[in-house]
Image 1 (cartoon, one colour):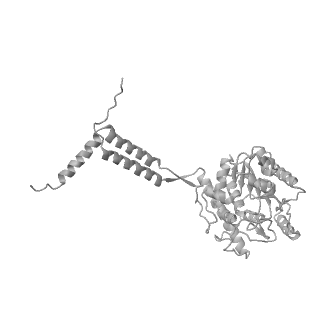
Image 2 (cartoon, rainbow, N blue to C red):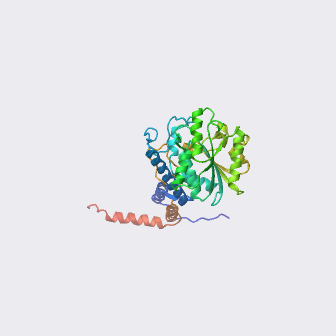
Image 3 (tube, rainbow, N blue to C red):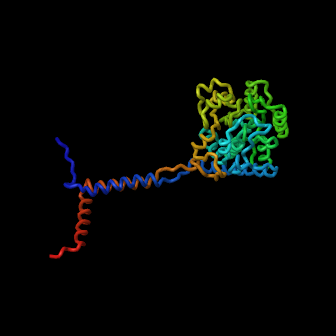
Length: 381
């Protein structure tokens, strides 16, 4: 038996055109009029970024008070977080664009998001490996940890690459102490090494190593002076365990390209920038602090290739002005307006019903046509 479908005797082409126009116009409207939606952890992200900004401002003021001018060519945003091309405590070459990109307090919000994705919560212990190469990122990491009320156990290396914290009397560990003394940050590094090649300052002059050791001593930090690369890893792991006081370490954060932290340049490039929940197979063959933690199932935040991370989270690359807290996809993501989309679907359904499934639309159009014809002047006889 044939199934019978009812439909009106006549379908208006004008009606179908109208429904089509509504559909196309509605789709364009849905695409154009998206709404910015707050991302998870919004309040914590803003809080962390604001703390990082205050810290960066404090370091900038400290530099100015010490008579250290800010080079507009190197630091066009006048952040105060960009060092010099070469100084006695400069260990390796550095990427100026990456340093300029990192001098953004909104990276603290990025670290908050990564830590939350790693499962870090209030009271958790997080191990951290700092270098002097990215002092602004170091600040953002501490700001994120303190905002989340997590316990950061930090070990630093004092030397820095080009454009990092490479002023002999204002090393990263000096900045850290100053921020602590000003009451802006609570946490400080518990130990420090020379840094540089093999983490023992290879290639640095005796004068350079003396300047760095003087910085470690004036900040009253435990000096890590290993006899080998492996011993340096062993010492750091031991310090992390000791400071964790039997609490499990929930994440490891590496900032920059510390050889011991990530496993020389090979390890630095093997791990993905950002959050690593599982180590690549190739990385597990490279001994480093990060690899040892990841073998234990501890997720790692690998803060390298900064411009790539900035792009992923909607932060500017090498901005000419200090970015405002709250800017970037890390805070807001454009999403479709569900009410607008629902209204469009209803309009399309009603249009199809009126012009295809019933005679309502056809009668309306005919009525409009009759009214238009009656309003036109009649020709003279």
